[in-house]
Image 1: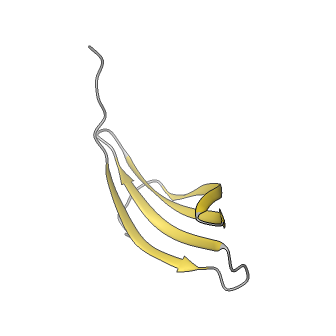
Image 2: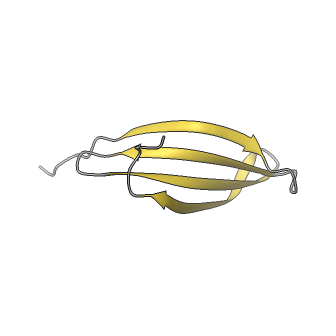
Length: 65
């Protein structure tokens, strides 16, 4: 039986992009068993569904979160 990774995810904010009406951005802290990091995630919507999801790692920890 394989190991299962348990993660905690903390969402700092979800906000509309001022330039693009169908985009939302979030700062997210991912906390895994062996590591953690903070990402900026941008979601582009088509109707009610996410059409594009982009993630950029902005920190190697969640200390500033």
